[in-house]
Length: 293
Image: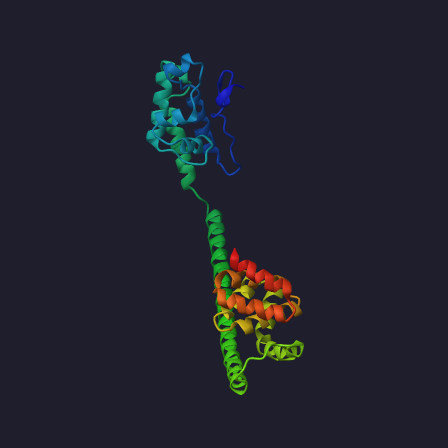
């Protein structure tokens, strides 16, 4: 074999294999078109250079693109009558007459007519199978839409509950600040207070964990991301600690990355400080690193 996919004696692009779905009359037409293409010659310059006709050049001569000609020759598409006539005319011109081509224009047009009639005779079983397939796809799409609507409803419910929890937490924090005018550095004993804060957002982490267990990690992360709209940094830190305690490490890692990337520097610093004070040093460093990326 030489360059450009040309074998000794003839071009190789005309030798197309047929799929099992290609019907008999279409195969006959495609084989005849392959035969006509083998009679086409390259231009004089290419012949002197020892080159053979390419599929792209042949397609230009019958006024179609290369991929379209390839589909015609493999029986995957029905050519127009004008294309068949043009191909026969070009083959006769290059060989010196119809008697050298081996097939008359009348015979080629008959093959085209038979292939066209074959294509139009689509049986009831084939049509019924297509209708069944389309119906099944429609049912699957409706089922998927229902699942998405259910997921949206669950997320909205979770956000509503989270807003209510936040209101309660905010009220308690306001009361604590009023009672303690000066901030007091946290000690180890303050972890008990953190556990009380975590209890207020435990419902969020439980719902996210359930979604993850059901294989809906994307929905779980969406729920956690939306929580940042209603949680302050202290509460976000509590959520991360709760996720670690409940061994939802992948959700915790993803939330750290998203929060550090999307939130303001001040909020990220507050969350990192909360995690650091609670002994979660790796997570504190990770959320700061995410903010820098």
